[in-house]
Image (cartoon, rainbow, N blue to C red; front, side, top):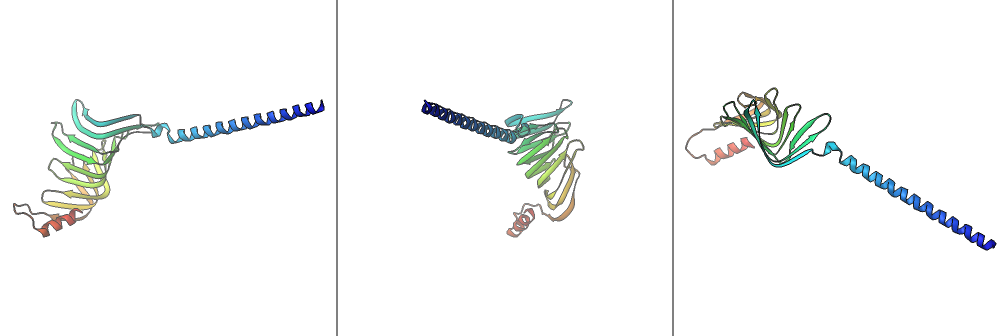
Length: 212
């Protein structure tokens, strides 16, 4: 009889230990899952996820019924938070600006662009090329466009290419039509003679050195 009681107590202890191990294991699993979920939430917070996505995006921006500029981009991502709203063009952008008569007055292309909606500010980076109505071309790696002040500027190296002249320097400022511009710290310029005679190899080397 005593042997049976002893065996029964032993079985109860073993059973209790199994329950304890099972509960502890479950707690560890739940804790692990909770930790993983917290990590996932941390990595995918609402601010990191776009509220809108579009491909092969094209649109016309109008003001008082008049077209102001046209935008074309392979991809668009819009992000929103409590402090800011911005649109990213991760695969590049083409922007064409029009005057009140719907004539093209300037255009900008870049491999990456970002628009801050509330600030009405654009940022273009990587292989930025801007042209005006006269055909003058600006090349740089970073450019800012302030819609409110109608100003375009950069503190980076710039290159202005005209029909008969190439100008380089550091820093650039202009109105948004690229008509009245200046280079803050000019580094050099070269005049190109325009004629029907094909350029010699020496002329080509000189132009290439200036453009690089």
